[in-house]
Image (cartoon, rainbow, N blue to C red; front, side, top):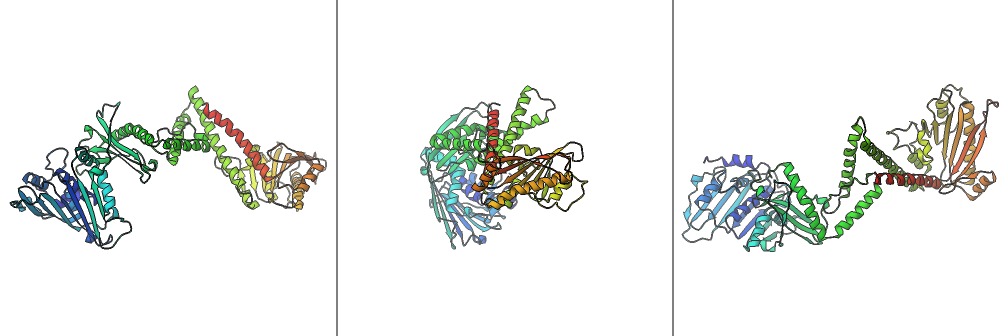
Length: 617
């Protein structure tokens, strides 16, 4: 066997190993040597004074006889396939020197394991005095740039890591009734608030009793799967370990994401199989298993662990049903796509994400198909319903937002309906989520252009580009909507003009709305002679009792709506040509709350129809 340059081996083998691996290696060796106890003593001035770190690890095992020492001294010299013959090199990846004192029944060896180590330089002495057996390792000369985590010297955190890593071997000790205790001590000159205790104990007899559950597996790959587990309610804990037992160590397997861990559940699930033996790299840092095999194991474990957790706490399923029903209510366009295989507590964000991904995956073949068969056609109709429902949901959010703006200024309400100081071309995917003219009426979605908060001259320039400018073109309608794309053709067009007023305007301002809209109607008719088919004008304003009486006295017609609204038709003639036929102008006076209520009812009707469509798809 070729003797190895230990410093080079340490650097190459354990380049990415953390300080935790020093403790893991010493405990693994102590278990191999039949130790009943291990004491880990950590000395340090302060976390930021990493050069002062020193660690002593002492066990009461059988110590090294000649054969054991030769395996220690030579790389890859192992006694069975469960051992890799490389672990002790992790000492020199973290420390420049490891003094080793090992006492066996017959021999005592005291040597330095460092860059100058040669096995022939270690001369054993006889244990004539019958000194107690055991191995002590004294680590000094910390080599890293810093102590990367306080957990690496924190007794409480180390206790958790050691139990998690060695759970199979520790529990095996408990089952056999064999004692094994680990004591972890920290002596740090300057206290650290992140370290709650300077002492921690591990006693295998304190580990909870586990149950064994043989698992059936339809695959021939894993033929002897046995799950050792315990799960219990403990309101002080929220911890779930899922792992594979590989050569006596736990290798974590992500079966339950941390976001799905139920509060008040403490559980350990370790899967045993002969197939797992030796399935790690030579340094035991990484599980060496094909991703498809890991995925298969997760698929086997997931429903079993989910069932065991929910049997321990039935309220988890109840909470999941509440979450799922809420998602269906808020995202009805995804109903039927929410995953049903969530483990533990349902992660709302993850479930929503997966439903959206399923929507995309299922829709893609339909979009890419050149010809649709009957099944694909029905599926296409379903996706159309889902897309339309998503848009209706957006409209609901807009209505809710506008309702919450009750006391906001007129300008803010205007911006929420249509962005101000802009001209918006016909509805497209780019504009449908920023232009909310549908709040007034769904027919306004078929517009050619919307001019928002622009001078009347801008509107006249759009509908009569060849007109001669006059002096009476003042005013700035809040919204002007044009229903035609052929302004210079022979076809007559329809126009809509909207005026928004502050919520609590006085009677004079309310009455002025009617006069203002009629004046603007006459200017439009005058400058666009013979081309106007119909004009609709909307005055969005509150209604005082006296203004209601005026509307009634002047034969305005109350309309069916969620609140109150009034309508009257006027005839408006051109100022320049009295011989032209007058143009019909419909005026609506609608309070803001009624406007939103009507929009909400229309949306509700759409939503009900679409929900039924998706349920029956």
